[in-house]
Amino acid sequence: MASYKKIPLKPFPNGWYMVAHSHEVKNGEIITRRLVGKDVLLFRTESGKLSVSEPYCPHMGAHLGHGGVIEEESIKCPFHHFCFDAQGDCTKTGYGTKPSSRLKIPPYNFDEKNGLILVWFDEKNTAPTWFAPQEDWTDWTEVKFAEYNFNSHPQETSENSVDVGHFGIVHGYTGVETMHDMESHEHYLYAKYAMHRVADFVGKKRVIRTEFNVNVHGLGYSFVSTQIPDLGMETRHFVLPTPTDIGKLRLTIGVSIKKMKNFSKISPLLNLLPNKLALKLILDGAYKGYCHDVSMDFDIWKNKIYIDPPILAKGDGPVAQYRMWAQQFYYDDSIQPNYVPQEII
Image (tube, rainbow, N blue to C red):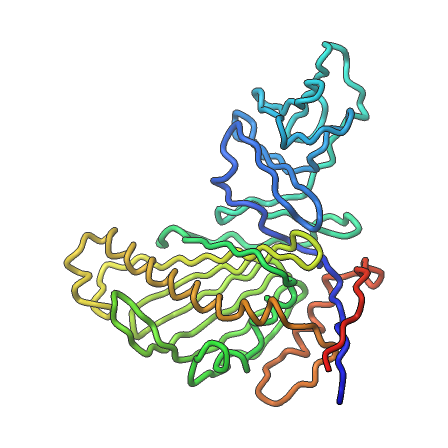
């Protein structure tokens, strides 16, 4: 019998990763998050200035996320009360003496947009060469988010965006059509599909046609917009895989719907409700459906192995092109985890 060796992906692709929602870091508050095997410290000063950095006090190593407090525009270490501003510079010691200029907390490059706090990871600490776009949310509802933690890798989850073959087999979509072939420009990948699926809105199941515009910015940030003419709806979806440790992933997904005034295509009964309530019911339905669709991939992601090169067949979609595009997010000499190859007979 043939055997297949488990070929590990390099664990941490370079790029932007979501570490928190903006609302999770309020003025005067501190949180700690996990990214690429390390703790990341996030805090806002009392005036609202955001800081993202390594979490350890350079004085004697205390973790500022455990017992640190915000005092005006600085974070105060619980160990010796050394204070640091949002740029990581030490502003005073706990003794009233002049701090050394070498007392500096290494900051991370971060970007705050679309209600998200994104952190730039680069294995060699190279500065960001691109950014995720800011979307206009004027005519859209809030984004409703869900979060999942499991064993996987950002390249594996993002590969679903081009794995045309799994749309019908895993998700049960029918009439799958590629409306725009995958194209890529440096860090950015785009594709467009149409397919039919069963949707349950306001307790009524219907088969609807949906067009998906897939926008992938690196391996940690995907933004999908859809048009559903049968329902007179447009939706937006986030897919945000963040590698927390080697082989471990925190996947954040989110959905928003474009505000509507007439709901007749969905259900005429919705027109009898206050607009805000009708939109909430539709958003709740879209959220439930989105979570269900994404969860159908979980068992496969958690248990699959990475085969390179894959033995592809007609109908798979541009998987090979995607994997070639993805190589730009690693260095040739990137850290390779010390996996013991496993064999499946």
